[in-house]
Image (cartoon, rainbow, N blue to C red):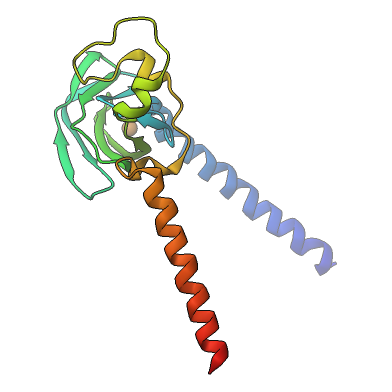
Length: 192
Ligand code: CU
C-alpha cells in the first residue's frame, strides 16, 4: 500500500508547486519589456557599423537608459541614446576596432522595471583601396575615401585582411625562410 501511496503523495505535492511557480514566473515576464530585434543583430558580421538600434516589444521609459560599447581592443565608449520611436533606442557608434564588439544596454520598461542585456557582433574593416580599385566599376568612384556601395559589395571572406599592407611576395619569402630554417634544424638534429 505504501508503494502506491508515496508516488501519489509526491505528485499531489509537486504538481501544485510546479504550476504555481510557472504561473508566478509568467506574470512578471509578461509585464516587462523585451528586446525584439537588434541592428547589428546578435553574432552578425558587419563592416564599420555606425549605429546600434534596439527595438523592444513596448515603449520604454526614456530616462535611465544606459548604453555603452566595448570593441575588441577593450575600449569602452558610453553611448548617447536617442528614441526615434517609443519602443526603439538608437545610438551612434564610434569607430570600432576589427573583431568582436559588445553593446551593453540597460533600459527601463514601461512598468518601471529595468532590463538589461549584452549584444555581441563582429566588426570587419572594409578592404582598403588596392582590391577596390581593381573592381570593375563603370561608375565614377567618389574621390572621398568613404566606403562606396560597390566597395562594400566586395565580399571579404579571407581572414588575411588584417595583413592588408603586406605584399604577397613577402609572405612567400617568409614561408620559404621558415621552411628552410625548419629543414636546417631537422638536418642538424639528425646529425647529432
Ligand atoms: Cu516589469
